[in-house]
Every structure is written in structure tokens, then in C-alpha cells.
Image (cartoon, rainbow, N blue to C red):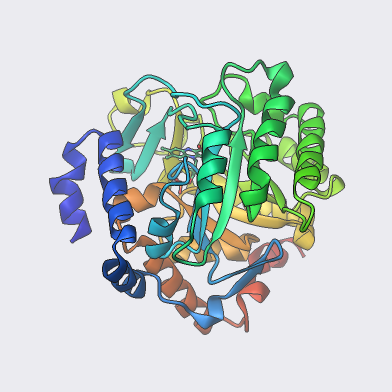
Length: 369
Ligand SMILES: Cc1cc2nc3c(=O)[nH]c(=O)nc-3n(C[C@H](O)[C@H](O)[C@H](O)COP(=O)(O)O)c2cc1C
């Protein structure tokens, strides 16, 4: 039914307009008491066996919404109503900014992929902090806050920009993510080098501890799939050394070759980050590599091309405690998160593992032992 609707309506619309339209419906439904209860009952059923403890937080299940969909924290209840068990808002930057000029979002339907060069369009850390502070949650959910660098802030002053966002947002975050991996802010990914990352993560950690005193806000870093393997290892080692809580792998890719893309060359050549099905293999590979390196010392979050329950299960077996998705939601529609949790429950029941936690990293341990 959704696929028919997608072909008939969304596919004919500009992708960003379609996003805003769907977003409006989701927010409207979440504001309508009877409707939201009905939708949540249908789409966000709870599977006892999928209960997940990660980052010191209790969640209903392991699958959540990746950053970039709800940049300004306006649809947390709406996305929770659709069955995403954690919502990562952002990327939020220190200052508000419009992002890149449109068109900046492209659908590669034949590849079940997207290319975006949104460029962190968002209302900025002050406005988003205010919204989060004023929020009365309808559904209990985990809210991650993903922060990035304001475009006009020079690379040399990046730390100050992230610290500003941390001071404003950490109190409202169940967990905090330092995003250094989006391809659409010039120079951002240079911050993934350990020389740049060390002072950045140290300063963000200190700022979070200074601002939030009653609890320790978990801190994660989100990395690109385009890092060389040795650089993935270096980030993993640094994260362990600095006492970080986790790594999110991965963001979108700037690669195009070797992904077997079938869409028109004109589309494929659009500048920006590619997400969705073609990213699956490399994201899974980076995740497995991280788990082989850090084991249970960090919480790993698997994202990139997760289209269905089998993909999510493979991420868990590779080492992910939490799994996220974005692009496949555009193609699969409102039943996406529900199908993943349902399928995960079935896979767990059919597996030799008593709990989801036992399954985490099982395949990577098998290969590396
Ligand atoms: C339109 C769009 C905007 C995105 N914006 C952000 C962002 O602001 N911050 C971020 O960390 N990741 C962002 N991402 C990356 C996603 O969070 C995710 O890492 C990536 O898309 C891979 O997952 P997927 O294949 O399930 O989409 C964005 C992705 C898309 C498609």
C-alpha cells in the first residue's frame, strides 16, 4: 500500500517537499490523542525480549531513527509513535544556518538510495535547546542529540562551536553524538584525524560534565564509511583511551565506484553523501572491524543501508547494540520500524541466543577467534 502511494505521490514530488509533507502528517497524527494512541498501538508494539540496555539507558528495543531526519527536534513523539525506539535529533550546529541551496536531496530509486548535500540546515543549538526544554513527552523514548560544526566557523575554532552546542544541549540529551563525518560541511571530516579528534572529544566531554552534574551524559562519535581501515582502528583506540561511550558507524559515503549503482549517471554524479542500500556492505564491514578492535568496551551503533530485519540482525551479530535507519524509511514507509522489531524478535527466538545482548558481536567473535 505504501509502495503504491510512494509511486503515485511521493516519487512525483521534489524529495525535500515530500519529506516536509510526510513530516507534517506525522506531527499532526502525534498531536491528535486518539489517533496517536491507535497508530502507536499498531506500529510500536513492544516485544519484551527485545528490551535493550545500552549506554546506561533502558530502551524498548534496539532500533532507532538515525540523525538528519528530525534535525530540529520537532517530531520526537511522531517518530516514536511509528516505532523507532530511540530518536537521534540533529545535526544541530552552534549557530542557526540555512544549509546548502536547493536542490540538495536526490532519490536514486533504482538503487534504493539517496544522495544529500543538505549541509546541516537547522535552527541552531539555542533554539533546539529551548524546544527540548519545553517538551512534554507523549511517549517515553530515548533522545540522542547529534552536534556538528557551524559552516562559517573556521576549522581552527571548531572546538568552541561544539562546546557551545554541548553547553546548551547536553542537559536535554539522553546521549550526545559528536558528528565529524558528514561530507557536506567543508573540512568537517578532517576532524576525524586523531590529532583533531582528541582535543575536540576531550573538550566536549568536559563541557558535558561541567553543564550536567546529576548524571554522566553518554558521549559517542559518528564516523564516515570512507575512512581507511587503519583510521577506523585509530578512532576506535582513541575512543577507548578517552573513555567515550560509543561509536556510530556509519554516516553517508562520498564513494560512487564499486557500489553497483544502476541509477542515471547524472543522478549518481550529484555531489553529496550517498545513503541506503549501496552503503550496506561497507557500513557492516566498518562495524565488524570496530567490534573486533574494541569488543564490549564501547557501545556500537550500526547504521547505513539497514533495510529490513535481516540487515538489522546482521548488524547485531557484527557487534551493534543499537541499530539505526533513515533512507529505507523513505522507501518502506510507516511500517519500517515495526517490521524490523518484529523480524528481530522472530530471529532471536530462532537463534541459539537467549537474549539480544548475547547475540551482539557473535558473528565477529566467531570469525576472529
Ligand atoms: C537527507 C539526509 C540527511 C542526513 N543528515 C544527517 C545529519 O544531519 N547528521 C548525521 O549525523 N547524519 C545525517 N545523515 C546520515 C544518516 O544519519 C545515516 O548515517 C546515513 O544516511 C546512513 O543510513 P541509511 O542508509 O539508513 O540512510 C543524513 C542522511 C540523509 C539521507
